[in-house]
Amino acid sequence: MLEPNVIPRFEPRLRVGIVLPQDDQQEIQIEFPNDSSYIMKVDDAMVNTQPGAQIVIRIAEKGISIDNSPFTNAEKIVFKHIRGDHGIAIHPVISGRNFHWKKYIMVHLPAKVEVTRYQDTLLVVNELDLETYLACVATSEMGSACPLALIEAQTIVARSWMLANVEQKHLSLDIDVCNDDCCQRYQGLNNITDYSLEGAKKTRGKVLLYNGKIADARYSKACGGITERYENIWFGDPLPYMQNLKDMPNPENPPDLTIEENARKWILDNPKAFCSEAYVPAKDLKNYLGSVDEEGKYFRWTIMMTNKELTENINEKLGLQLKAVKDIYPIKRGGSGRMILMGINVIDEHGNEKIFKIKSDYEARRILHKKFLYSSAIIIDKKNTLNDIPQEFIFHGAGWGHGAGMCQIGALGMALAGYSTEEILTHYYPGTELVSIYK
Image (tube, rainbow, N blue to C red):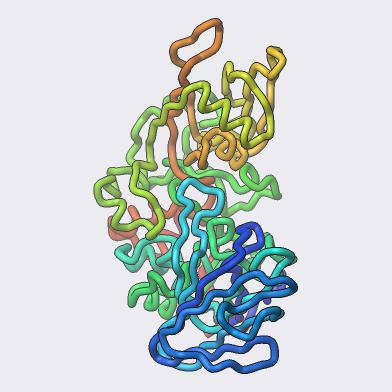
């Protein structure tokens, strides 16, 4: 486990949650490689395994069990890698918890895997070295066809965020991070390539520092043309290296998108940002995205929802029984155009008009779409109004994700345009210093 506020002088080990209690999984399937590279330990007993064999682990009456075996109430099952380059296969594993791209995948995990029971569900943890983890993250977050400058930048940013160790979301589970977008995407050895291995090797031990501390280097898929300030997303103290910057060759002096007129013009416009089609054509984007990402347009996009659909979404997410939505509007925007405080004018179950205030980018995105809205940098047009109730809402949006820190598609655009790893990092985290903390 990582220690908070400590800069390591040697490569640390991580504990990564693969199957979490919130997944509510009662069973998983394990497939061994064909090269006799894993040993299995059930509680205190060493158990012989057959190359290529498959087993199913389930929740039992008191602990966990292995199908067709004498182990019916074990406390812990551990798989340990002893040789070779192959990982142990585990499925189903969720990718995209609570997001619109949620899928179930198989992952191949290196090093050590622990399976235990947490209350009435399974908990699966992968313990491994940080640099192996980072080589896997680089091509889980983005595709293996990305230029090396992007892979290196992604690796340095992922290492910095991991070692800054600010959020510690999963301490109660005795893990450093989870495997998904809640923390960082980690899909084991599934997408690892010579590129991602080279990116980890060439940047080994390198992090971004600011005033002697490892930078809390957040990132998202596409900023939409202007990056967002840290404090507008996580409501903590401002970070000088995460500001409103134009995702362009000259990042200074972005338009003030906290002003509604400017935000509308910006979102409906198509500026030549690094994350725009001017640098990354939409037809090519799928080649560079992570394996679980869905093809689509993320710099500028439009979706339509009926009042019925929107009302059902809000009712489901907030546990309400609203009859209709009259209006959705920004009360406060961040500098990237994202809604930091959103108002929703509704008709409740008694026919009375009420106003709800939604107080974060994340919550706005969560409740406005059945799966998850790409971004809260939106303007909304109302159509076909009957009895003062719009029948349709048209969402025009910019970007994908919270928009703070490195814009991954923008960094891709920079790499494709010939910018170096250092230039990418300086662009998104101005004032930071690239330093090697261990070899």
